[in-house]
Image 1 (spheres, rainbow, N blue to C red):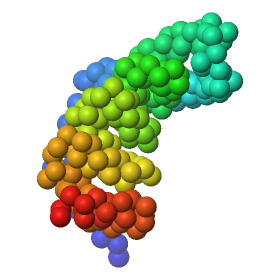
Image 2: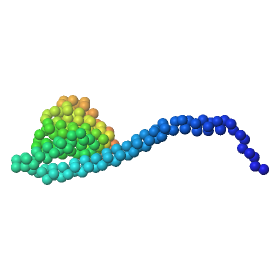
Image 3: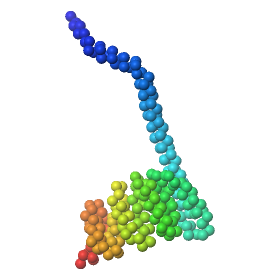
Image 4: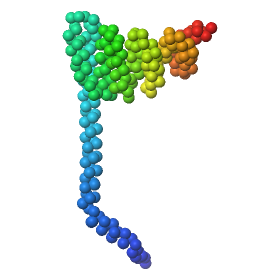
Length: 229
């Protein structure tokens, strides 16, 4: 014989209260659900639009890079000055307010043009801007490395060391990191800061990956022998 479920007045009372709450607040609940749906839809639209704009900006940057490659070997040719200046003007408009890969790519092209013209102050500024725009991309340490080279060409040795230190400490892998580390030692020697130079060279030998690259490991070892005698 099947047993009947015992009567539960507390359960019925709870269900009645919940049903009553829904009836009394249904307008607010509907509005809340509507707001949540609108927010969700807005997020989807924003992400889709942002992705579209990033792809469009990247395509524009690569198009500008193509124009740069056409002029790259003619930067010192006076007959091409108008073309180069026109490209620089377009690039300066393009990079305004842009970040991420596209922004960094635009600033990189500006830096390359100015480096090709041996305008080291403007090239350094552009490389710094590339590193800032592409702070979350692999282009950042590359830009810092090149900014350091521009600073060195201007005789700004301390600034060059600071840029190289930021470069080798970057979270993204940088293939030329041991070269940058060696340059830190070399420039500190130039500044007369021998302890800092020794520390920089020893860092190459202490790094498991860097020490496997014979060129920089051997150079670091030879400089340590020379300055520690």
